[in-house]
Image (cartoon, rainbow, N blue to C red; front, side):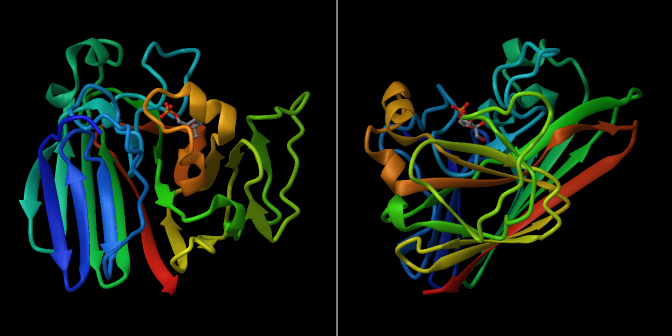
Length: 280
Ligand code: TA6
């Protein structure tokens, strides 16, 4: 990992969390000393690049968008956030346009206010994102919490709670608009996976067999769930991801990414996830 930027640390009992001001990226969540979040050993932590791992925040759009010149996943993960409130167990981070690198800011010239709150409790981590439009004009966004979970052996990991939901398969895109539905109780990873499950009304997704228990993801106001593992070839192609890192992580990302949300002047949108260590 390259040089370390400024961080905020939370502690409650035997649980801890660490969040970088750069991107407000949470890079560690430990319960009883067990790390639950994956960050690559080769990640850049000096603000020169979005952090490869943790919980990067995706705003104002997920992926690349034909109508936007912003890089993939927007600018929130590359911006300088401010920590405005902090207790032992909670921290609140804000981002306004002046925290966005100028070159990126010019590519999305709207006024906005993001508030990201991280709350730690015993065996539980809540991350909540509030998006406000203080301007006189409506603008559109998609957003997502790009959580990288640490696992001991990806071949054992299963994701429960997605059965029956339609998904966009980015590895094998369908011909035409038809989208398959997930038929499996447990989604596993045995090759590259990059899927956007749409309108997931079940708000509890569980990551089973992490190697140190199960982790539940409870989502609120995030309709979509992305499951991603780059597998061998894509891992090798990423400079800030170790060749073997694909064995040690799975991204399960809650978001609102299928449809753009139009945020009217003065309006606020909020979404959150609560991660719970369910079974040790
Ligand atoms: O959320 C999954 C995804 O959009 C994948 O398509 C993959 O590209 C990943 O995010 C990582 O994106 P990044 O821009 O961080 O390399």
